Image 1 (tube, rainbow, N blue to C red):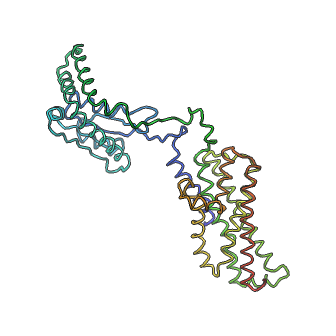
Image 2: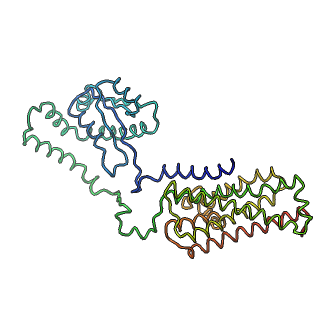
Image 3: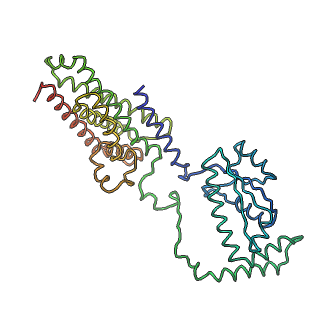
Amino acid sequence: METLLSLALPLGLTAVIGLAFGGNQNGNVSLPPIGVAVLDRDDSFMSGLMAGALGGIDGENAPITFDVRAVGSEDEAWRGMREGEISAMLEIPAGMSDSLFGGGTVDFRLVRNPSERILPEIVEQVIGVGVVLLSEATTHLAGPLDRMQAMGDSLDAWPDELAVASISAAWSEELRRFEKWVFPPIVTLSVSSAEDDSDASETGPSIDIFAYILPGIAFLGLLFLAAAGHRDLFTERSMGTFHRIAAAPAGVDALLASKFASASAIAAIGLLLLLGSGAIIFGSRWGDPMGLALMVLSGSIAASGMVGLLYGGARTERQAETLAPILILSVSFVGGSMIPLSELPGFARSVAPFTPNYWLIDGLRSLAASEANWLGVLKHAGVLTGFGLSGMALGMGLVRRRSGSGV
């Protein structure tokens, strides 16, 4: 059961994080259209403009779109909420236009779907911004808006061209008053798409979100799998097997080397299963097969050596089981398994290269991005192997010292 959890947990976390932040194939986060019911009790030209503006938030580049539905009663809106089609209802009060242009106050009412949390909040924030804009517009553009309202209420045929021209001139005159504060703007926003950017190749090769996340989280499972291979050491101590083997010609070193080898093999099989599952479930590609084999083998050795050092230095199984999660989570955090290194403080980024998961993550991501072949990750494999062998040697020394069978 523990082995299955060590394999399933990294895949589950990768799926959740990737789906939450990965977006679609174009890299944009897309939500389904949010259902909004509009109960228009004013039924005027201006209320129609408001509903149309809300429904007009659309297009391929819009992260949020609204499915605006006119309803005749509040009960109709509640039916839509119970069926999961409506996230919120906006009620435009009767007499809204007259109050708006007559200097009175207007109280819009928004009813949220109680069975939803995120989508109604989005509707509330968007409409809140719209209400502020409407309030400012009616304050500063009251003259042209009054004339538009009068035209809309008495519109039995096409409006007179001179009337339209006069309203346009009034708009221009009002906006010209703000020209020196608004134009040219002192703050601008430039938006570009990575796909259309001719210099996009300079930012580095692309990598899918799941192949980016999985190596870091897989290292967590790798350490827990390696711990399962070293845990038998305490069982053999309690049963007396360890002392009998220590008295044999092969001695303690042979026993500890076999534990290290078995833990490395378990970790390697587990890492292969994780990466293979990532390829099948998420469609991730891991690049050069020889480079992948180097990273799997060296990463497993590093995980086994790190856990072996911990279990070799622990006096009891309980002590080892207590320290193992602390060490695993600390190394995972500093090495970039849990949070991208770019988001960590400078001190943590400087310490990261001294952790094995830093090299495993960087090597696997380089392979996944087709940035390197087996020669490109040879340094990573060498560092990881060094981590593992050093941990094994130190762990064996601690066990020999405690058992009294060596120096």
